[in-house]
Image (cartoon, rainbow, N blue to C red; front, top):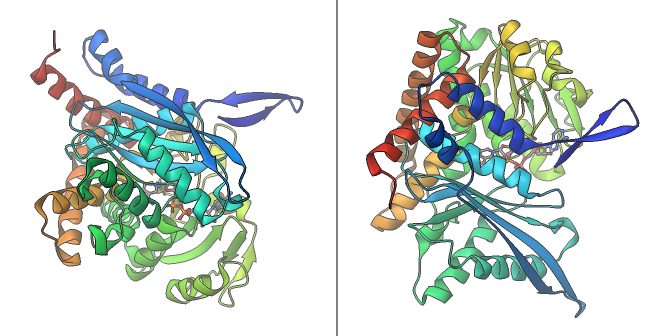
Length: 425
Ligand code: NAD
């Protein structure tokens, strides 16, 4: 649970799960749905905590805690990433799992929502220790994971290699190769072409649709991007290729600025060698704390949760705020941004390109037949454009912002399936 300072001396916890529940409640209150049904779809169906003993390289034993939450399996198997971080908590994992349910429903793919995590600091562990921890975690959830039940993917501090270990551990227990148990795998072992770029690509498709709606020409727009990892770097590159001038970029180490626009191809090359954006010769240093409040048309938070809050939302100057990250804007910030007429593209729509191509990966694994990158990108484009259109329509019809509209679309889609399936027993 993240902490916030209150009156200097008192620290009160900010519950990410409560934030997610508030977003749900606000949208649900606009829909005429039975209260009991809303309760059923609002809360996680199963949250499990496992203890994970690991033999460390020095021969000692260390206990870790692993979490997996299945928020919903109404529309299909639970789907969602696994995060390795010292701040992982049940509160955070439950929130992230809930957002996955709504995200999959917004893009209308046949998945529910799930999320997992291990409380650990992989930067202080050897690769062997992380591998043994991953395999023990997978074994701990062998009864939960499966192509038909719960399908993990990478999240913060997990990657293709982690997914390969999960796939192998699951397959060794199942006594046959099961590629479709995880997504985000290396392409040579059942991964999908285009998955690595999919989230950033989806973010930029959503921004392009927003620019169209607001009648702003991409080549007259400027942008700032917070985070230059998987999502931020691909989003920045595709914005640059679309003609948008990306003037501000930062990562955890600092920020850079060039009023004429940063050459993103050159920055990616620099980043490959230097592992950080600061020092890039084609830009000046910039205080990264101010990046989300830069005087640009488009701002893309693509790093962390709870970045724009009730306290700082008034400082946002952009016309479009595209949520590449999950949960970067708190519920207290939303009304302030709305009053300032900032067009917020909510995470459950904006960054849904990642899970959409994960869905394609699962489909391809189950068919045993793999698509070209063009086929993947064409299908992603269609799904993102349709989802953006569905959400925008509901927003315009009900005179609500896009977050509210996205939740309304998602809740209705989940409820419709609950009603058709009925309640067993
Ligand atoms: P990543 O680890 O590849 O990149 C994160 C970036 O954020 C890095 O550049 C890091 O330096 C930067 N960062 C971290 N702390 C920062 C700080 N305090 N200030 C500025 N920059 C900071 O992660 P990612 O996969 O790009 O994910 C970023 C966000 O997008 C997360 O919220 C994640 O949940 C969300 N997301 C990712 C995907 C995906 O497919 N990767 C899909 C949907 C949502």
